[in-house]
Picture 1 (tube, rainbow, N blue to C red):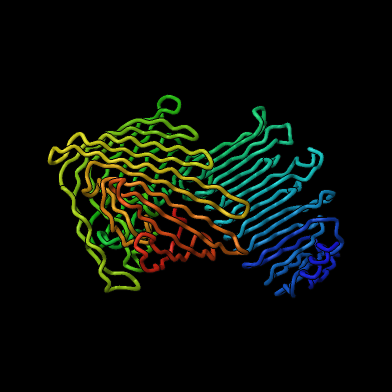
Picture 2 (cartoon, one colour; picture 1 turned 30 degrees about the horizontal axis):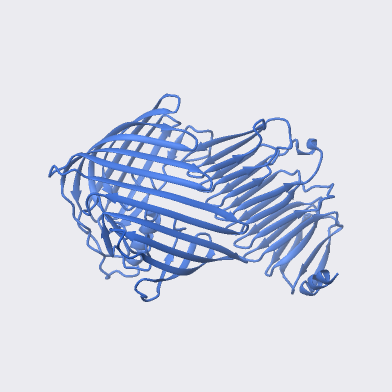
Amino acid sequence: MIMWGIILILLSWSTNIPVEGINSVELKTKRNELNIYIKEYDNIEIKAEEPCLESQKLQDGRIELVFNEDAEVMLPGNLSVQISTVSGDIFIISAETLSVYPSYLEINSVSGDINITRMPPVSFAFKTVSGDITVEELLSVDTTSWSGHNGKIETVSGDIYLEPPLPYDLKIHTVSGDLHVEGKLVKKSKIQYRFETVSGETEIKTEEDSNLVVRVTQVPTRVGSLKGEKGVWITPGNSEIGGPFIYNRVDGISLGLALSKGGRDRISLGARYGFSSKRWSLWLGLRKMIIGPLFIHTSLYSRTATPDFWKMSLMENTIAAFLLSKDYYDYYRKEGFNAGAGIILPAFHIKLSYASEKFISLDKKTDWSLFYPKRPMRENPTLLDGYYKFITTQADFSRHPFTINFLLRKSINTPDNEKVYTGLMRVGFKEKIKRDMLLVSIISGASNTKDFPFGFRLGGIGTLPGYSTNQFITDRFALLRADYWLKIGGIHAIFFFDAAKIGSFEEPVKADVGLGLSPFADFSIRFVRNIEEEGEIRTYVRLSKRF
């Protein structure tokens, strides 16, 4: 009784809206949290700490409610429901005794999470940019009630958690968001999930004799509508040729396009032009499946390359260089070909390649940026120009919550006949903890030289943000990075820590610690200070999660 009294005091404002003549409801909010209860109500009832309705509009049997404060909303079960939010979280709970269900459920979000407890048998469409989607429990109903329904889920980087699996066919599309399914399928007939993703991972934990079939297709972004696996695709920004717009200090503005056609057998090509360097970058690749998961591949290229792909995304580096004259990558030119073979399995890829390449040093061609047109950019490092031959082994493993990436290059021939090897390994961990997220990355690198592009350069926002860009040049390192994203209302507070052993393990640890704030999507403002030197507090902006 005391607890209910406290709740009534906190929710001191309320209103009731009759639903006679209303068949659908649309709830809108920007950054406020909505707790929605679907029960056997005769009215729409709204409770909040203070007046929370910015506007309400009724037209043709549809009522639109716009909220400017956190609120609890009680809805009758017989309405079609549409919800839209920017960063506010959405919680939906169905009454255990609910016997009348919404005709349709649609939710659109940018960074707000979608959380549903006791999912009713209803067709639905959920769409987010970075918000996670979680379904916990199903409404206890006769299994025949789930027949005739379907669902569609779309997200860019938000993860999807279905516990237990929804007992009807689903179409799921993500760019980098992961799919987690766990529990017992209540329906005995075959259910199919079509999961199309660019780089998202899957974790399916159901009974061995489950009738759930999850068909995973890893795809780039298609020109036009999605129809199976075949067609023409625009390759994502981390491809050999990059995205349509790139800006850096060695090429300036660089415009291009990468296309690929086919399914598991694939042909890919790309071209781009740098307006400051007056250079073309070209790439052509072929992949042919031969026996089961075994494939052969070859590619030809003449392009600007970087060894710093692991530090930050190409998109984020482009924006930093274009706006602020902060180009964090270093570059060189490579021209040649590679060929090899590999294996593709659902959770594991491995590829062995031979490459014959000409390396060419690149000079800085521009200092311009939009906000700092006269701020000089760093000079680009030089390398030993000439012809190189390499054997490369590349492997990737993914099983939630872990990802492992491995790359090893060993020279067969170099211009000065000195043997060169370089290796890089990354272990990533990502786990959702209720409304929060823990991200951990361990990266280690080893080479027999510090020379560019085979050695490693640490320091700056892509590695150790508490230190200057490329402050440390080394032939070996081990780097730990950890982020904890704490959800507070419609925003995230970020606590992060970095520590590295650079060079000899007798050297002191380089470490920094910081705080950040993410008001929407993956954008964050961060404050960091290195521990070792007790240096100044540095402020910087990230446009994506660090890893």
